[in-house]
Length: 341
Image (cartoon, rainbow, N blue to C red):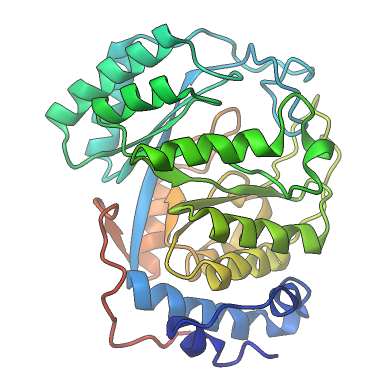
């Protein structure tokens, strides 16, 4: 139970060793409450009881030449997911209006495929320019694949604030998840975004057969990259995909994983993402004691819980929605960092 009172050390600059981090993932279930308490102290120090909401627009679906083992949109998957080309600018703009009306802080424009064409980037950039004129407070995240440097510049000039490109798994386990692109290509895409002033968003998918050591490596890799936003996905196994029969997670294991990412990346936005409903189940609210961000609504090819259930959960915790958390000053000290449970 080395993590008792570890939060104060982390807030004061201590960095966990990988051995300490591994002990979090392997902790006995009976110690999870104490672990959540320490994670909450750190969460509260940097983010108070604010929750940032995110919403996805699946702007281009299916038709993907990549062989990612978790994804229903892969050409290797035998699924009946929707397939359509990039939606028009009007649809992207309407999605932003819905996001703004729903107290969403970040609107995520996501498209399937290996990389965007220049024409697709032009369409998205045109829509983002209009969104920024009408909803300047709304932060825009693009997730378009392996973008080029020229495309990155175009996105930045249009007003894109953040770019999502998940590591998904560890470098060691990467080839078990996907073979059509490399781990290094993902790192290079994030580096290109950072070079041009776009905030890097990168996260993981847990429950794909990786080891506990792999999960620890993911947390430290994202720390090294300097990802500002870290979506933690829990595999929602989809029939027809390579990982259709994976069922390795329990709600308690998910809480340990979230705590790991918070303790290793204390100042960063930790977002509970895809699969939270089916993996955390009745413990979703405990997850928000650790994470400070969630998706509202549906994901790319799987359903989320009804929006009102998320708003109720936030209210029941005594938490508040933060619409514009992107430029938060994480140097501000919160006075009360004790857990109220």
